[in-house]
Amino acid sequence: MPPNSSTPPGQERLQKVLASAGVGSRRASEELIARGKVIVDGRVARLGDKVNPETAEIYVNGERVVADTRLVYIAMNKPRGVVSTMADERGREALADYLGSVEQRVYHVGRLDADSEGLLLLTNDGQLAHKLMHPSYEVPKTYLAEVAGPMSRAASRRLLAGVELEDGPVRADSFKIVDTLGRTAQVEIVLHEGRKHVVRRLLEEVGHPVSRLIRTAIGPIKLGDLKVGRTRRLSATEVASLFRAVED
Image (cartoon, rainbow, N blue to C red; front, top):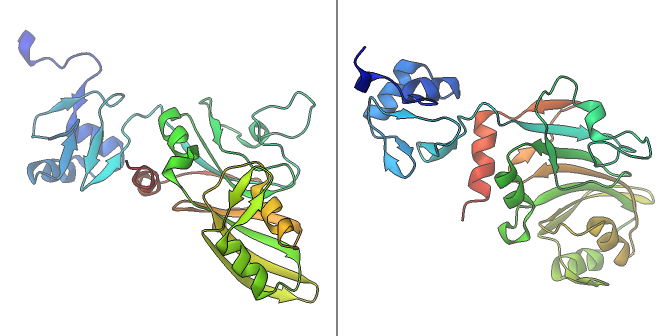
């Protein structure tokens, strides 16, 4: 084979990279390239292009495609009583106890206190994790809370208008009462704040302390029917939606 026809180390044909990333078959990927639907590192890709899947920034139809097979994105339904750390020096149950066969070293995106449960994201994509946690990107988190009830409309209005806490003001992005059962109410609250215990502190400040707290969504990613203590890999579509949520 002539020297100039060889593939540089670490580089592969673009259609093969797209197929491996789940975009479609190699033939379908070639058609996307030919139609100008694939952008690599800021330019329209062409048939015959070769890329390094570990470093290339690839978009297909405007959606980010992660081709680096070393990167993993995991959703977990954290049980109550589990601490939001990979390992606990005090011997308490931690996140790593639930990751099973995940070979990569991953980190949790944000936290849930030990008494809270629900959706956590784990990844080894440090750049995306930083953006998801940074307040400037305002990625919303949705919670289902069981609180002392019944809840008045005045309390609801305060949550939406803003409440002064000891570390500054905070307000709910949205709020609704889901159900009322005697002296207990179920409410849904959406915040993009990441301060410690902010949901519990906010609801207690308006007179409705929390007895149970479940995070049901982080941005576009939903907890859905994922069972308590279980994990699942995010789909390529879900990963793309996370990148879209933190676009500059």
